[in-house]
Image 1 (cartoon, rainbow, N blue to C red):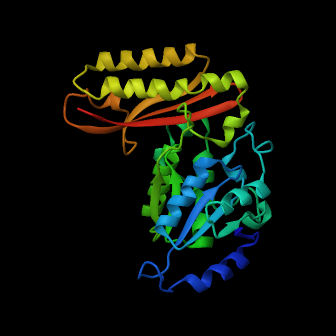
Image 2 (image 1 turned 60 degrees about the vertical axis):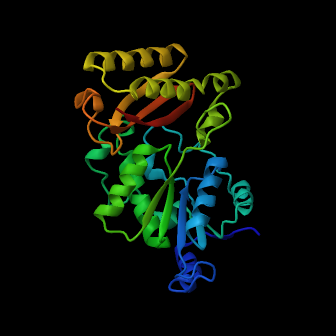
Length: 300
């Protein structure tokens, strides 16, 4: 069965209202509503988010909206693929219940919106450095979707690791009664993290793209034993940056951080203090495609 599509806010709210406070026949508890926010042009990674949502809720709403406030000058807002019919057909295969596909005017009566949701200090690093204002745009659209759908749970992919951390912060700081679930990265057979922007890759670039994941795996393996000096750590990072660049990428960043996205690990520890959860994060251009990836590891 195809999901029901709504384009305006009031109709979606009206459709969801009967489920609030109702008892779930299967779970023996009140029914739960899940939200899966997307910009459309869906792939298997998005569909996995819906599958996870169905494990945690009775009703699944998938939003499809290419959000103008999170695109900077010269980025691909105008060319970003809009594939609503194909997206809805894919969502039917995984049992999504509702699709919310509003117009820009419905979401933003005034652009730029006079009200802002600032992401704070956590956005002043990584993607936030090269895409200023991007996470403020994410903050306002996610806040609006939370207010419109009023979900009990929302699912976000871990590929956008910094975004996930910012959304968890937003929910905590604004006291949204929403459980945030981070879904593991879905990869192609050769390790490339699935992304809507992978379609920008040429055939030859697509053969090179999995190098990014392999280099992260290699770095995680080299770090996991701990006990290395600051100098050795910095040398490892420099070597990885060189290897990635030599493969044909233009690196935006390659950094190692504590898992909660605190201070850069190279500025704070030398891997011989105690066990520590870290995340290796990379963003790099390959042709027209800006690829994101990350790798979790335990050091020590």
